[in-house]
Image 1 (cartoon, rainbow, N blue to C red):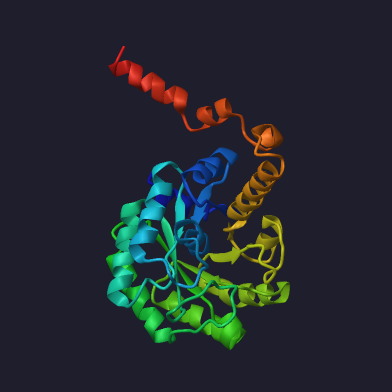
Image 2 (cartoon, one colour):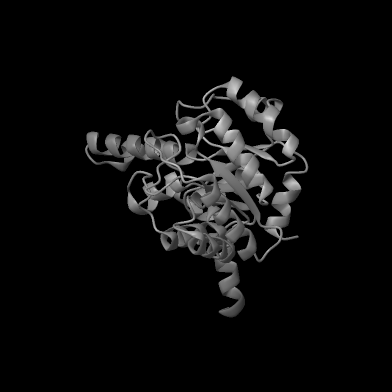
Length: 290
């Protein structure tokens, strides 16, 4: 069974979470921890690849390369952010072709206007529902793997309100989007309203459990009880990495640049080599160079 088919199988038995991964190491860690799927965030990619905030600076091909590196090292489905499709309808069609080539199984396309921003930032602007529908149709027609899953995301909740968000997603469902996603939900009451009004469409609903301060902090069980099928944990691994490495570097510098001061903060060298497969690689090499 392909990874895309396995993702669709996950949706038959919700709930589940797509764990954020920002490089090959965190992708391997996510799979080792038991995550059923991985999520590659545009916010995180902007930070990791460009050292920049999520304000639409990362190019389509930079994101493609970033996704491909993650897909190479894991066997579980990869859900990859596609932002606005990086332009018009032809750009959107090329985006899904590249994401499939990279090895992803799922993407979400958002209805922001350029320059786009992280969904939890202020100052977002929207394209018309008709323009978003055009991009979705272009993506659907360009899809080669029928199991590849296309999620329509709206950022309209914070811009034009709940009713417009529902209307937009209803229209996106009609043109064939596989799943629906309202980003930057601000309350449990909004979650209940979204679920009540969108579940009759028969499309899986996605919740972003990012710990940004905007959306409610809920467990996966609570998310499911509110009518959502699956969730993203998108930036938490990167933020945990940032705090851990910042702590290690500051302590190292403050304690006279001695590794003794930070030994307890690090995975042992031998353990990390086993994690990345050194023994396996040596064994494979010996098959050819005894």
